[in-house]
Length: 116
Image 1 (cartoon, rainbow, N blue to C red):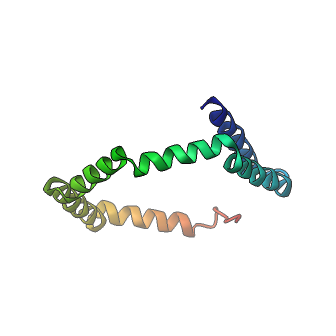
Image 2 (cartoon, one colour):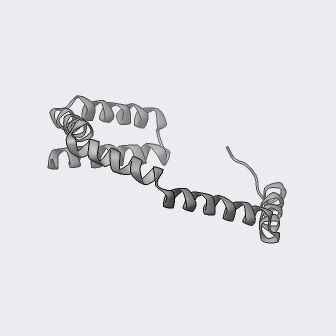
Image 3 (cartoon, rainbow, N blue to C red):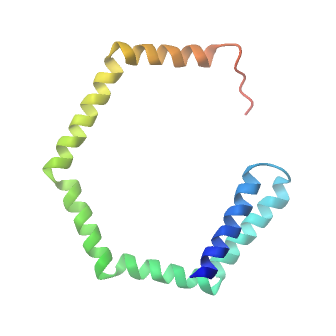
């Protein structure tokens, strides 16, 4: 498992380096190559098999059933309704209107330029 962790760290470092800029084309090729190496390596295949076994095994089925029971429970339904009501109240409140206006003012102010 240490081999997979090291490969993941190497791949992550390459990906972060690519995202931060520099030579994007070369870094992009290296990141794609690193990801492909992880996928095709023996460690990568073992990790995929382990995840598949976990997902398809008895433990995975029990976890799915437990999550479905939780989603279907009355408590979760009440919590969802309460959160929805709280968001609606916030959106309709004076503080919500002021926050929207402040965001609009910031977005429309000439001091901020979009560099994308």
